[in-house]
Image 1 (cartoon, helix red, strand yellow):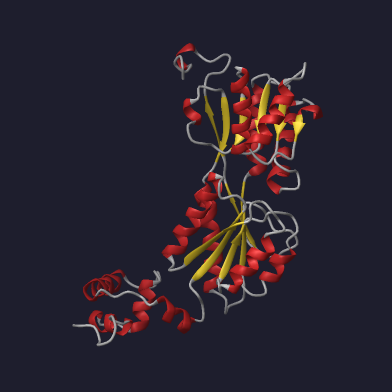
Image 2: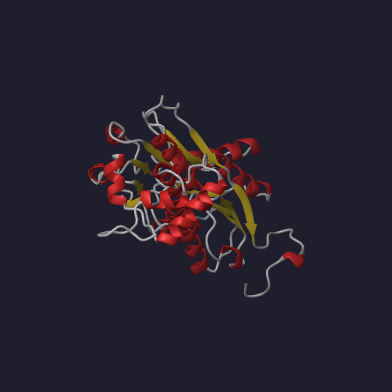
Length: 347
Protein backbone atom coordinates (compact mmCIF):
# COMPACT_ATOMS: atom_id res chain seq x y z
CA UNK A 1 0.00 0.00 0.00
CA UNK A 2 1.28 3.47 -0.84
CA UNK A 3 0.53 6.80 0.78
CA UNK A 4 -2.12 9.02 -0.74
CA UNK A 5 -0.89 11.58 -3.25
CA UNK A 6 0.06 14.96 -1.78
CA UNK A 7 0.83 13.80 1.75
CA UNK A 8 1.93 11.03 4.08
CA UNK A 9 -0.17 8.07 5.18
CA UNK A 10 -3.23 8.85 7.26
CA UNK A 11 -4.76 7.17 10.29
CA UNK A 12 -7.37 5.71 7.93
CA UNK A 13 -4.57 4.17 5.84
CA UNK A 14 -3.11 2.57 8.96
CA UNK A 15 -6.52 1.25 9.99
CA UNK A 16 -7.20 -0.22 6.55
CA UNK A 17 -3.89 -2.08 6.52
CA UNK A 18 -4.35 -3.29 10.13
CA UNK A 19 -8.03 -4.15 9.45
CA UNK A 20 -9.32 -1.91 12.24
CA UNK A 21 -11.09 1.43 12.39
CA UNK A 22 -9.25 4.77 12.51
CA UNK A 23 -10.68 5.20 16.02
CA UNK A 24 -8.97 1.98 17.13
CA UNK A 25 -5.70 3.24 15.64
CA UNK A 26 -6.10 6.42 17.69
CA UNK A 27 -6.74 4.40 20.85
CA UNK A 28 -3.62 2.31 20.26
CA UNK A 29 -1.45 5.40 19.71
CA UNK A 30 -2.77 6.85 22.98
CA UNK A 31 -1.90 3.63 24.88
CA UNK A 32 -5.54 2.89 25.69
CA UNK A 33 -5.38 -0.19 27.98
CA UNK A 34 -8.71 -1.43 26.60
CA UNK A 35 -7.17 -2.47 23.27
CA UNK A 36 -6.04 -6.09 22.97
CA UNK A 37 -2.36 -6.90 22.55
CA UNK A 38 -3.02 -8.63 19.23
CA UNK A 39 -4.71 -5.50 17.85
CA UNK A 40 -1.92 -3.30 19.15
CA UNK A 41 0.68 -5.42 17.36
CA UNK A 42 -1.23 -5.21 14.06
CA UNK A 43 -1.58 -1.44 14.33
CA UNK A 44 2.10 -0.88 15.17
CA UNK A 45 3.13 -3.19 12.34
CA UNK A 46 1.01 -1.07 9.97
CA UNK A 47 2.49 2.13 11.39
CA UNK A 48 6.01 0.81 10.78
CA UNK A 49 5.22 -0.40 7.27
CA UNK A 50 3.59 2.84 6.15
CA UNK A 51 5.92 5.18 8.05
CA UNK A 52 2.87 6.86 9.58
CA UNK A 53 3.51 9.93 11.70
CA UNK A 54 0.67 11.47 13.65
CA UNK A 55 -0.21 15.01 12.63
CA UNK A 56 -0.32 16.82 15.98
CA UNK A 57 -1.82 19.99 14.51
CA UNK A 58 -4.72 18.06 13.00
CA UNK A 59 -5.11 16.14 16.25
CA UNK A 60 -5.34 19.38 18.20
CA UNK A 61 -8.01 20.79 15.88
CA UNK A 62 -9.97 17.54 15.91
CA UNK A 63 -9.84 16.94 19.68
CA UNK A 64 -10.02 20.58 20.73
CA UNK A 65 -6.75 20.51 22.66
CA UNK A 66 -3.09 21.29 22.14
CA UNK A 67 -1.69 18.02 23.44
CA UNK A 68 0.51 20.04 25.82
CA UNK A 69 0.70 20.31 29.60
CA UNK A 70 2.56 23.02 31.47
CA UNK A 71 5.00 22.53 34.35
CA UNK A 72 6.11 25.43 36.56
CA UNK A 73 8.99 24.86 39.00
CA UNK A 74 10.74 27.27 41.35
CA UNK A 75 14.42 26.60 40.67
CA UNK A 76 15.49 24.61 37.64
CA UNK A 77 19.13 24.79 38.81
CA UNK A 78 18.19 22.57 41.76
CA UNK A 79 18.54 18.89 40.76
CA UNK A 80 15.33 18.11 42.65
CA UNK A 81 13.26 20.05 40.13
CA UNK A 82 15.14 18.61 37.19
CA UNK A 83 14.27 15.10 38.39
CA UNK A 84 10.66 16.12 39.04
CA UNK A 85 10.45 17.44 35.46
CA UNK A 86 11.82 14.17 34.09
CA UNK A 87 9.10 12.29 35.95
CA UNK A 88 6.39 14.53 34.50
CA UNK A 89 7.81 14.18 31.01
CA UNK A 90 7.98 10.39 31.28
CA UNK A 91 4.27 10.02 32.03
CA UNK A 92 3.24 12.80 29.64
CA UNK A 93 5.04 11.07 26.78
CA UNK A 94 3.42 7.74 27.62
CA UNK A 95 0.02 9.39 27.16
CA UNK A 96 0.85 11.36 24.03
CA UNK A 97 1.34 14.75 25.66
CA UNK A 98 4.20 17.22 25.37
CA UNK A 99 5.49 19.28 28.30
CA UNK A 100 6.16 23.01 28.43
CA UNK A 101 8.55 23.87 31.27
CA UNK A 102 8.80 27.24 33.02
CA UNK A 103 10.87 28.45 35.99
CA UNK A 104 9.59 31.02 38.50
CA UNK A 105 13.01 31.38 40.22
CA UNK A 106 11.23 31.34 43.63
CA UNK A 107 9.72 34.74 42.76
CA UNK A 108 6.05 34.57 43.66
CA UNK A 109 5.40 37.79 41.75
CA UNK A 110 6.49 36.18 38.48
CA UNK A 111 4.31 33.13 38.81
CA UNK A 112 0.91 34.63 37.75
CA UNK A 113 2.41 35.89 34.49
CA UNK A 114 3.98 32.51 33.79
CA UNK A 115 0.65 30.77 34.42
CA UNK A 116 -1.20 33.20 32.15
CA UNK A 117 1.39 32.69 29.42
CA UNK A 118 1.02 28.92 29.51
CA UNK A 119 -2.76 29.17 29.35
CA UNK A 120 -2.42 31.58 26.40
CA UNK A 121 -0.34 28.85 24.71
CA UNK A 122 -3.32 26.53 25.07
CA UNK A 123 -1.89 24.02 27.53
CA UNK A 124 -4.54 21.49 28.52
CA UNK A 125 -3.48 21.35 32.18
CA UNK A 126 -0.88 22.60 34.64
CA UNK A 127 1.45 21.11 37.24
CA UNK A 128 2.78 23.82 39.54
CA UNK A 129 5.29 24.01 42.37
CA UNK A 130 3.97 27.22 44.00
CA UNK A 131 6.55 29.86 44.82
CA UNK A 132 4.51 31.29 47.70
CA UNK A 133 1.47 30.77 49.89
CA UNK A 134 -0.78 33.18 47.95
CA UNK A 135 -2.48 31.10 45.28
CA UNK A 136 -5.39 33.21 44.01
CA UNK A 137 -3.92 33.19 40.51
CA UNK A 138 -4.05 29.38 40.54
CA UNK A 139 -7.74 29.51 41.46
CA UNK A 140 -8.27 31.76 38.42
CA UNK A 141 -6.30 29.33 36.24
CA UNK A 142 -8.49 26.44 37.39
CA UNK A 143 -11.46 28.09 35.64
CA UNK A 144 -9.68 27.29 32.38
CA UNK A 145 -7.62 24.11 32.95
CA UNK A 146 -7.06 21.46 35.65
CA UNK A 147 -4.19 22.29 38.03
CA UNK A 148 -2.16 19.85 40.14
CA UNK A 149 0.34 21.06 42.75
CA UNK A 150 3.66 19.33 43.45
CA UNK A 151 5.95 19.46 46.52
CA UNK A 152 3.78 22.11 48.20
CA UNK A 153 0.09 21.83 49.14
CA UNK A 154 -2.84 23.97 47.98
CA UNK A 155 -3.76 26.99 50.09
CA UNK A 156 -7.48 27.62 49.82
CA UNK A 157 -7.74 25.58 46.60
CA UNK A 158 -9.70 22.40 45.96
CA UNK A 159 -7.21 20.53 43.81
CA UNK A 160 -4.89 17.52 43.71
CA UNK A 161 -1.34 17.61 45.08
CA UNK A 162 1.72 15.40 45.49
CA UNK A 163 3.89 15.90 48.57
CA UNK A 164 6.95 14.42 50.25
CA UNK A 165 6.90 13.06 53.81
CA UNK A 166 8.55 16.28 55.00
CA UNK A 167 7.63 15.98 58.68
CA UNK A 168 8.46 12.27 58.94
CA UNK A 169 11.78 12.60 57.12
CA UNK A 170 12.95 15.49 59.30
CA UNK A 171 11.83 13.68 62.44
CA UNK A 172 13.72 10.49 61.55
CA UNK A 173 16.95 12.26 60.56
CA UNK A 174 16.96 14.44 63.68
CA UNK A 175 16.22 11.41 65.86
CA UNK A 176 19.36 9.75 64.47
CA UNK A 177 21.51 12.67 65.65
CA UNK A 178 19.82 12.76 69.05
CA UNK A 179 20.37 9.01 69.46
CA UNK A 180 24.11 9.63 68.96
CA UNK A 181 24.05 11.94 72.00
CA UNK A 182 23.85 15.34 70.28
CA UNK A 183 21.79 17.82 72.31
CA UNK A 184 22.93 20.98 70.50
CA UNK A 185 21.81 20.54 66.91
CA UNK A 186 21.72 23.61 64.68
CA UNK A 187 18.80 23.97 62.27
CA UNK A 188 19.58 25.59 58.91
CA UNK A 189 16.31 26.08 57.06
CA UNK A 190 14.69 27.65 54.03
CA UNK A 191 12.11 30.47 54.46
CA UNK A 192 9.50 29.57 57.11
CA UNK A 193 6.67 30.72 54.82
CA UNK A 194 7.41 27.73 52.59
CA UNK A 195 5.51 24.57 53.45
CA UNK A 196 8.63 22.42 53.25
CA UNK A 197 10.54 24.70 55.61
CA UNK A 198 7.72 24.75 58.15
CA UNK A 199 7.10 21.00 58.05
CA UNK A 200 10.77 20.11 58.34
CA UNK A 201 11.18 22.44 61.33
CA UNK A 202 8.11 20.81 62.88
CA UNK A 203 9.70 17.36 62.44
CA UNK A 204 13.00 18.63 63.87
CA UNK A 205 11.22 20.03 66.92
CA UNK A 206 9.05 16.93 67.43
CA UNK A 207 12.11 14.65 67.50
CA UNK A 208 13.58 16.80 70.28
CA UNK A 209 10.33 16.71 72.24
CA UNK A 210 10.20 12.93 72.03
CA UNK A 211 13.79 12.74 73.27
CA UNK A 212 12.99 15.13 76.14
CA UNK A 213 15.45 17.77 74.89
CA UNK A 214 14.70 21.44 74.44
CA UNK A 215 16.14 22.85 71.18
CA UNK A 216 18.20 26.02 71.52
CA UNK A 217 16.42 28.76 69.56
CA UNK A 218 19.76 30.52 69.12
CA UNK A 219 20.84 27.61 66.91
CA UNK A 220 17.83 27.87 64.57
CA UNK A 221 18.44 29.84 61.37
CA UNK A 222 15.67 30.13 58.76
CA UNK A 223 15.23 32.09 55.56
CA UNK A 224 18.24 30.57 53.78
CA UNK A 225 17.78 30.51 50.02
CA UNK A 226 20.96 28.99 48.58
CA UNK A 227 24.36 27.49 49.39
CA UNK A 228 25.96 30.90 49.92
CA UNK A 229 23.46 32.04 52.57
CA UNK A 230 23.71 28.61 54.23
CA UNK A 231 27.51 28.85 54.36
CA UNK A 232 27.35 32.25 56.05
CA UNK A 233 24.77 31.03 58.57
CA UNK A 234 26.85 27.95 59.38
CA UNK A 235 29.93 30.13 59.86
CA UNK A 236 28.08 32.34 62.30
CA UNK A 237 26.85 29.37 64.33
CA UNK A 238 30.26 27.68 64.37
CA UNK A 239 31.89 30.90 65.63
CA UNK A 240 29.84 30.83 68.83
CA UNK A 241 31.54 29.74 72.07
CA UNK A 242 28.73 27.28 72.66
CA UNK A 243 28.25 26.23 69.08
CA UNK A 244 26.43 23.19 67.73
CA UNK A 245 27.76 19.65 67.85
CA UNK A 246 25.71 18.65 64.79
CA UNK A 247 23.78 20.32 61.97
CA UNK A 248 20.39 19.72 60.35
CA UNK A 249 19.77 21.22 56.87
CA UNK A 250 16.41 21.37 55.12
CA UNK A 251 17.54 20.86 51.50
CA UNK A 252 20.52 19.89 49.36
CA UNK A 253 21.70 23.44 48.64
CA UNK A 254 21.73 24.30 52.34
CA UNK A 255 23.60 21.06 53.12
CA UNK A 256 26.22 21.92 50.49
CA UNK A 257 26.72 25.40 51.95
CA UNK A 258 27.12 24.00 55.45
CA UNK A 259 29.59 21.35 54.24
CA UNK A 260 31.63 24.07 52.56
CA UNK A 261 31.76 26.06 55.83
CA UNK A 262 32.95 22.96 57.71
CA UNK A 263 35.54 22.17 55.03
CA UNK A 264 37.06 25.66 55.10
CA UNK A 265 37.48 25.38 58.87
CA UNK A 266 38.86 21.87 58.74
CA UNK A 267 36.04 20.86 61.08
CA UNK A 268 34.09 17.61 60.96
CA UNK A 269 30.60 17.60 62.48
CA UNK A 270 27.75 15.17 61.87
CA UNK A 271 25.26 16.66 59.42
CA UNK A 272 21.70 15.56 58.69
CA UNK A 273 19.69 16.96 55.84
CA UNK A 274 16.97 16.56 53.29
CA UNK A 275 17.86 15.38 49.78
CA UNK A 276 20.63 13.01 48.84
CA UNK A 277 23.14 14.48 46.39
CA UNK A 278 25.90 13.30 44.07
CA UNK A 279 29.10 12.09 45.77
CA UNK A 280 27.57 12.26 49.25
CA UNK A 281 28.66 8.67 49.80
CA UNK A 282 32.35 9.32 49.03
CA UNK A 283 32.98 12.48 51.06
CA UNK A 284 33.92 10.51 54.18
CA UNK A 285 31.71 12.80 56.29
CA UNK A 286 29.19 11.60 58.90
CA UNK A 287 26.06 12.36 56.85
CA UNK A 288 22.45 11.39 57.59
CA UNK A 289 20.35 12.17 54.52
CA UNK A 290 16.63 11.99 53.87
CA UNK A 291 16.21 10.43 50.45
CA UNK A 292 13.14 10.03 48.24
CA UNK A 293 12.28 9.57 44.57
CA UNK A 294 11.93 13.05 43.06
CA UNK A 295 11.04 11.52 39.68
CA UNK A 296 8.08 9.80 41.34
CA UNK A 297 6.72 13.15 42.53
CA UNK A 298 6.59 14.24 38.87
CA UNK A 299 5.15 10.93 37.70
CA UNK A 300 2.39 11.00 40.30
CA UNK A 301 1.52 14.63 39.54
CA UNK A 302 1.32 13.89 35.81
CA UNK A 303 -0.90 10.85 36.42
CA UNK A 304 -3.31 12.91 38.53
CA UNK A 305 -3.47 15.63 35.88
CA UNK A 306 -3.94 13.27 32.93
CA UNK A 307 -6.61 11.37 34.82
CA UNK A 308 -8.55 14.62 35.19
CA UNK A 309 -8.03 15.43 31.51
CA UNK A 310 -9.42 12.02 30.52
CA UNK A 311 -12.54 12.49 32.68
CA UNK A 312 -13.42 16.13 32.07
CA UNK A 313 -16.92 15.23 30.87
CA UNK A 314 -17.65 13.12 33.95
CA UNK A 315 -18.27 14.09 37.56
CA UNK A 316 -14.86 15.34 38.77
CA UNK A 317 -13.28 13.20 41.50
CA UNK A 318 -12.69 14.64 44.96
CA UNK A 319 -9.33 16.30 45.47
CA UNK A 320 -6.56 13.79 46.03
CA UNK A 321 -3.33 14.02 48.02
CA UNK A 322 -0.48 11.62 47.24
CA UNK A 323 2.52 11.39 49.57
CA UNK A 324 5.89 10.11 48.37
CA UNK A 325 7.73 8.24 51.17
CA UNK A 326 11.18 9.09 52.49
CA UNK A 327 13.99 6.94 53.85
CA UNK A 328 17.09 7.81 55.85
CA UNK A 329 20.48 6.83 54.48
CA UNK A 330 23.75 7.23 56.37
CA UNK A 331 27.29 7.78 55.11
CA UNK A 332 30.68 8.06 56.84
CA UNK A 333 32.03 6.86 60.18
CA UNK A 334 30.62 7.97 63.53
CA UNK A 335 31.84 7.74 67.12
CA UNK A 336 31.37 4.18 68.28
CA UNK A 337 31.54 2.65 64.80
CA UNK A 338 33.67 -0.45 64.44
CA UNK A 339 37.09 0.48 62.98
CA UNK A 340 36.48 -1.69 59.94
CA UNK A 341 33.46 0.43 59.04
CA UNK A 342 35.42 3.67 58.89
CA UNK A 343 36.21 5.18 55.48
CA UNK A 344 39.75 4.70 54.18
CA UNK A 345 42.26 7.54 54.73
CA UNK A 346 41.66 10.42 52.33
CA UNK A 347 38.08 9.38 51.61
